[in-house]
Length: 198
Image 1 (cartoon, one colour):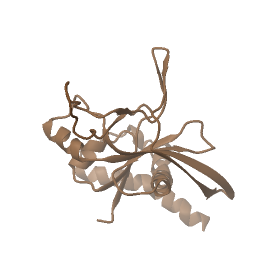
Image 2 (spheres, one colour):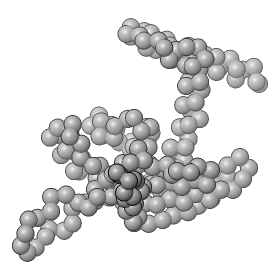
Image 3 (cartoon, one colour):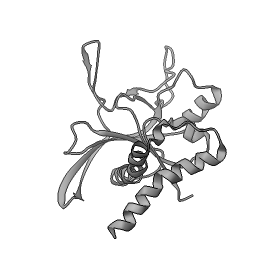
């Protein structure tokens, strides 16, 4: 119940939901779009709306034409102490949105997506030119979502570097045992370096 699952852009949000992962904090592509909840039942004549309004957290350019970002529901700022300096982080927030429907989804995925609501955070950090786009289906504040997404970088970096140094990124394995042994081999030099530094 207390677990939080954090993932990068290449992990598909609905795959995580379909596999029963509960609280998710996930980075998404900068061109991601979402849809609002359907408005209250419409009255009067005309065809009833089938889908909610499109939400674009970040502006984009399509065929030379600039499409503005959607207006956020709220903006929040706070300060973080990073490397001995206080930095002000600003976040634009869109609440209670659905993922944009994909052609590859089956009926089960569509039905589950209709029941799953997300909060979108466009996190603007002064050290970066472009904001980090994060979604969550849990009741995290913008600061908590930022700290979770930012916190995984330190965990991810050592094995990524070790894979390149040892050439493990070129290894393709099928044996069940080797699927465990190669990551262990990648982490071993980091452990040795850690002992030497002490």
